Image (cartoon, rainbow, N blue to C red):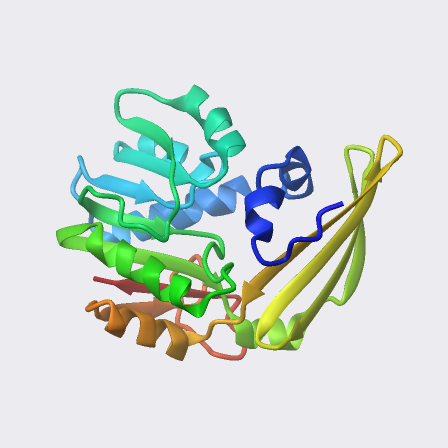
Length: 243
């Protein structure tokens, strides 16, 4: 049973169960967001994009289909092994920890689908933002797509059960101690499993502080994948564009 909540992401993201639970993520919505985002940023046709963390590469693959030169990076060895089957001359995948500077420069760094705030140590969040800024070239943009905590506070579903591929996932959610926590329990082939997702309830002012400390500056804020206006209480997403 998985009980380590301090570094929960190192084990949960590396399992097949994680990908089963989230297999129904809306691919069309993801492509719609990438279309809107790349058009807004007005990236050059041969732009280099770092997708970090990339998971199994769904955003990376589509960005490459749009014509961009993409590097997908993720801490999960299993996710990277899966993604590498999509590699080509302009699409590469590598195992990497986003808390460290990549060591190359990009036209854009994308951090998508609430992929920050996992860390127990507050300094790791700041270190990650700093690494994003350091990985940009002189005209590059960083993008963070995060949950909007104000919306979560008003719409959190405390309990639900989802049956996917014959596995019934029992999910409990709560917001406490400035973290959004999701407990996931299920059984498979006679074995009981328990995983915990724990994400810092970061708000706009937290990101503003991180970006300023990293020597960057915030350019724009959006509240959905249509790049609509951000409303602190009702927007489903908090999307930040910075340099």
